[in-house]
Image (cartoon, rainbow, N blue to C red; front, side):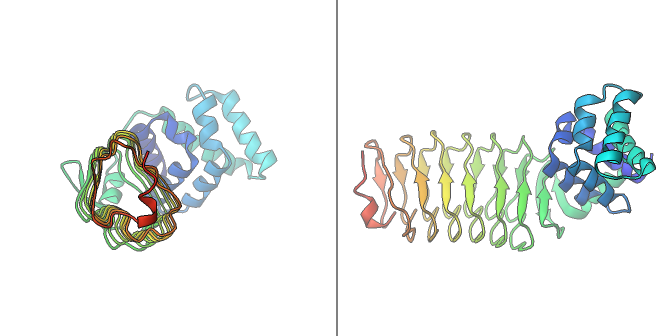
Length: 292
């Protein structure tokens, strides 16, 4: 099994059949883990639904009827050479049906991107703008991605439990981050000074938004805080100057000092009558009137 086949085989067996249906995530994995003459061909094939069709339609390794249909579509619709079309389809078919193998190459490439200890991502050492955190990671350590201004997008694993202190501090070009349900802790300053971050959805498993978590995220325009969060920490959204939309659920009963200080584009904030504490300069004064 050559390098290309090994990488696809490892991706499929690590992430399951659904990974072939997720174009963006699959492309990022291929780009991160494979760097040879087949990389661009695989990316193009993924864009043209080859992986998706293999996942959905090919039922066994010699399902020649369905395999030929996928090859013919590449040939007639996208003008691939027949031999190249057959080769690329065959890569995805073999990835799906070949038995799982220990892939030293995949492990070594992962080690080029991350320092990992006990399922904790200790440090990102790559230069990739699009980052997919390995599926077995359950914790992102303190400062693991801090000051990596090349990062624009991060996809996190579904079993992630916690994001450490200043984990993404000053990732100034980070635009998109997918925080999975199951994350229970987002520590202090986790996304502080991520100045290009525009939207964030806090998962329902989080109960507290910590100090300075999203401070100085100047381009943040909306935030979804789930019911179940009980407290918003000191300066959690300090100087998020473009924040215009936020919903504070009735479960929140404590908003600490400067939590929304400098968020001067916020038009309204409806606070529950069960609110127990609003700290010093927690928000622009004109917002405090909206208490149910």
